[in-house]
Length: 140
Ligand SMILES: [Zn+2]
Image (tube, rainbow, N blue to C red; front, side):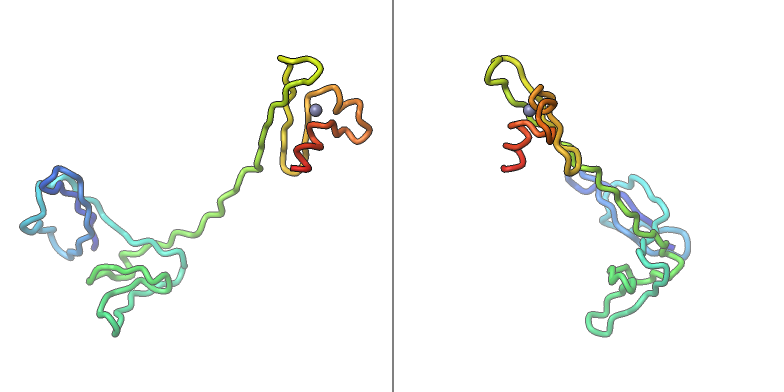
């Protein structure tokens, strides 16, 4: 089994390391004051995986992710964490334009996805619902 061992170093900062132990956990010298220990598992993005000792550098790797693992790691120390799709929220931007005919009055142009909307009366009067503010945004 693998354990995540948290200790404090000589500067008082928390340090975590992964240790392997099949029996009772013995904490070696030089680890600093002991803070906590919890069961640790490596995570694999693939549902199939294996532990592979590289003949090149002698290190142990979780394949096919090629994550370096400590010696003694077995496939029981690995859990499969599927990749989660992250939904990117539609960009929503807003700009304020001061009215040229009525200083102090502001109109708000909003971009929602690819659509622009403006709060000024010109947007309602225009046939294509595009006032000069929207046009200036579209034309950069
Ligand atoms: Zn406008």
